[in-house]
Image 1 (cartoon, rainbow, N blue to C red):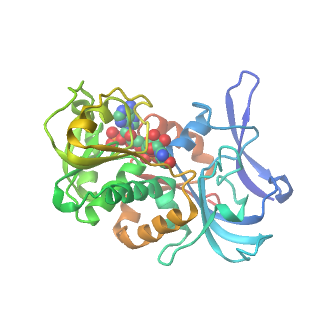
Image 2 (cartoon, rainbow, N blue to C red):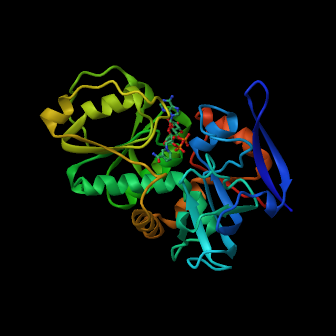
Length: 328
Ligand code: NDP
């Protein structure tokens, strides 16, 4: 028997979360059985656990969109007992049972072998949020954004994706400006490497189609008015990697930045990211994320605290990353 957080739907359609004892036979059939060492809390997990939006596709569901741990047994030649693996995305914790559990089953093709230099704890301090931050950085690099071109902007900077994006970009030599709505995160963001802090309020103000050029690149985790302003402030040839909707999924903008300044807006998705790119991003994270980041950006909770921290992340109150230890 092992413990897992199980979500169910009450008669009034409200989501109910409870830590339950399960057996391996309760797990939906998949090729690889994993002993989960760590999972993490992402914005989407917050939505799932609090029942915000339609994240969970079928109940009962074990949430947790990522996990890292050791293979217990495998029906696939790709993995054997004892292998360390990472799983993010692919609908896990949405359509398929996820990481808020001491044991989980997965398709072999969903798994990434643990890269040299990482372990389960570090991998889940990074988690889906950090993996997405790395994909955003790679997207900017592919768009030709280099440190010598001028400052890059990160929105929702004190959150999970934002914190790791600030850390990575700063480590890679970029001058980083951070947008945050919380004054008490300024010192934290400076510690991660931000040299300029902008207020959420200032960046949410209505924008003209084009504003003064300020940014060579941007990682946007919030969407809405802020993304509209970021686009209007991009330098000629600038690129924005958009991955989130913490403010809004809407985007009210004009074609002006695109047709007059050659700006590009590039989407960044972590869920269905192809395996080769996943492996590449994890290798980069192992190499580029400084050791100090793991202590600075994380705190640890057990399964019992997940409802509480899910409410916190939905209220925009989580700083950095929340590591989930299902064995606490
Ligand atoms: P967090 O909650 O940790 O971070 C989001 C941050 O956005 C907050 O910390 C806050 O930063 C800021 N924020 C919150 N509410 C608002 C608001 N109303 N207006 C403006 N800013 C706000 O979440 P994550 O970092 O885990 O995820 C960030 C976003 O990225 C989410 O929308 C998530 O769904 C998305 N995402 C997308 C992925 C993909 O594959 N495309 C994968 C992972 C995440 P501050 O306090 O500094 O202002």
